[in-house]
Image (cartoon, rainbow, N blue to C red; front, side):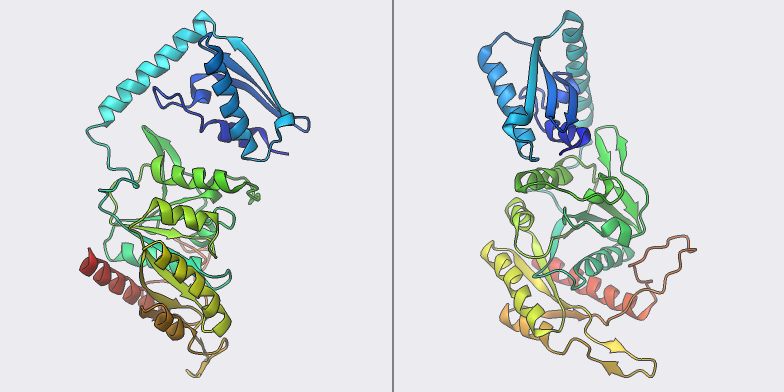
Length: 365
């Protein structure tokens, strides 16, 4: 059973073709209710055109169907718009036109615009549990520490973890013209985790995932950015494919562990990048060793997986990161469970990774 909020979120994607505003925002879809018996709503018709009515109903059924509501569970009531409602709709359209005109001069290029100056870097892995998100957030913070303007999209819609890893407990703010990302450690962050309550599971089908991801690109006020990092879900599923199609010029970093099987599976993510003509910047081998108190290294997960993967994908091994965790304390002002301090041994390694990424992207831009 879907909730009322999930139903409204799905319906908000239905746009008026002339103004681009949501039909929910315009008041043409209202009285949305979700129960075990299904989802019911009212369609307000601003025209007597039977074809337009049919298109609206079809759009509603499609949007609700994409979040798992069966056609027999969708109940639509239709009525004509009142004179008062028609006036309210006209006011909203006029306000939207004025806002668009005022913002046109100062609006930054959308992230998906072909001429957007930011460098996109997708961080991928063949399987979960290799520390891909840890690498992503620490690379993003390291780039910010180097003075770069960095955005981070938690594209792992099902398994979002970036807000928790970065110690973010606030939500995006609604500003004039859109939604502002949350800034943490100098990085602008957006994640599905900001839009669900109490770590609730996301039970969506593929098309809705793609729409949410596109919203992250188009409806967030990112401002000026030098780098946009994307924490992809593991594997080669729908979201990863959507990212590769939306960002044909994105670069990619593959994360693996030294274990031979992990590297073997990670090769699939690399093959996907190659197949979609994405440049692979290199390999990060996480959990490469464990350093004991006496300074000796234990190779807990074996050795050589990252180097072998780099050779197979005709790229380079950018970094080997030891097994460990930051020694951050919850009482610290900028506490985050997964961000290494800049002057820590592993923090310095991530600064080296940032320098290598900056050099490689500058050379290839």
